[in-house]
Length: 99
Image (cartoon, rainbow, N blue to C red):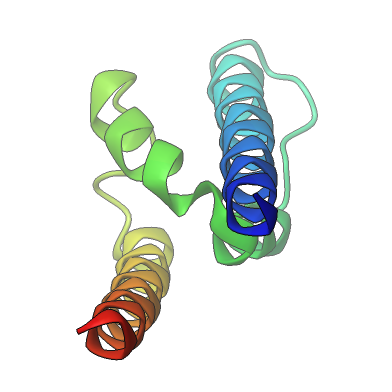
């Protein structure tokens, strides 16, 4: 039962952080097209590093925002690679212990 609670908490965290990242990224696109105050790239990258990179990468192409700006998308893809390595390592460690 303890494992299920942790799984639900992790899923809820990722759902919330990805929703927040989508809102932040969507607002930045809106602000860019309506001459409003923009979201700092460092804040977007921090949000990505906290886990919203899985929502922001698709959003980059869905709303066509920051996908042609190497200064933005290179760190984003490095953060994504880091998350994928972490998930791969955690999955391998978990499955290796269960066998």
